Length: 333
Ligand code: NAD
Ligand code: LMR
Image 1 (cartoon, rainbow, N blue to C red):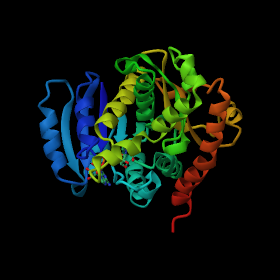
Image 2: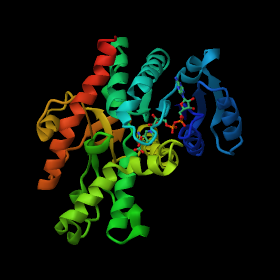
Image 3: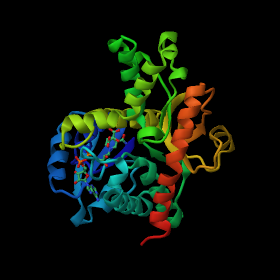
Image 4: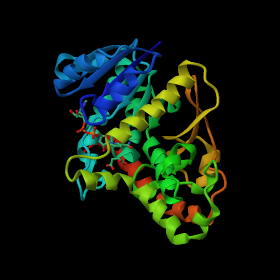
């Protein structure tokens, strides 16, 4: 049985995500941590759900991080500030970088072998930050650190189904989304959809571009609709849990053949470097999950000429975001 911790559990994502995690029968203990005291109430609330996980809440000022993390097997991090209209994810860096750094330090000290799932934005930089903290602590295991990009995958299915006039069939389309998690770094591989999307979509270049753009900027759609009230929370909780559930099944329940895109460490994977044509430390690729986490990174596969162009746009932005995260730890100001 698995011990799970959610850090930032009182927030817009944290609350519904905690509820979803509580429903997983493999979880023995669910520990909810936040800097705001209401997290104890959230834990009390969630604890009444009639599933096995014993649920407890922890706040920062009672040595709560240590108690929440001690011996945890899986740590999910939606802590940090969300966007408002007009902001980019990178605009969150100044606040969220420090939050992720401190939480990663807590993980290194209290549960160095945990699987760590980072939701806090900008994911393209916060995952490298966590990796640098773990490296400095001597606990870095590239197979156990994941940037959660599942919302992009979920959006790709939903928005593609809508674009082809089959809005009720979203769950039938599995579409790999690779790259990073921000604007043009999000690279949906529509040509690899299973089942295939209709040829008419690919022959209508305006329609195809509009669909790709909608997937890449799906986050903005929610930020604008919430008009200052935050960014995606409910669909993110769904997506975050979807990835966590896949990882739990593969890592702790022996499920085979589980493959899901995630933003992972690719620096020592020559095949990925060759495919993207650059030495990048992090990139989202389809990851085969297993007892050790990211057991195998799958190739991106054949890209259409349009997807090759999108890859170049992604590579124009992603390396800078990675370096920014790395420098935040290696060269603190
Ligand atoms: P929110 O403000 O509703 O909740 C964030 C929570 O984090 C709050 O409860 C806050 O008290 C807590 N928090 C702040 N500092 C903390 C710390 N040091 N330790 C623990 N908890 C802390 O925000 P939200 O809407 O839940 O979004 C959270 C983050 O997730 C944002 O950075 C947002 O951009 C990101 N996000 C990522 C994705 C993705 O696809 N990866 C999708 C949606 C949102
Ligand atoms: C999203 O994709 O919805 C999240 O990254 C939140 C955001 O800022 O758009």
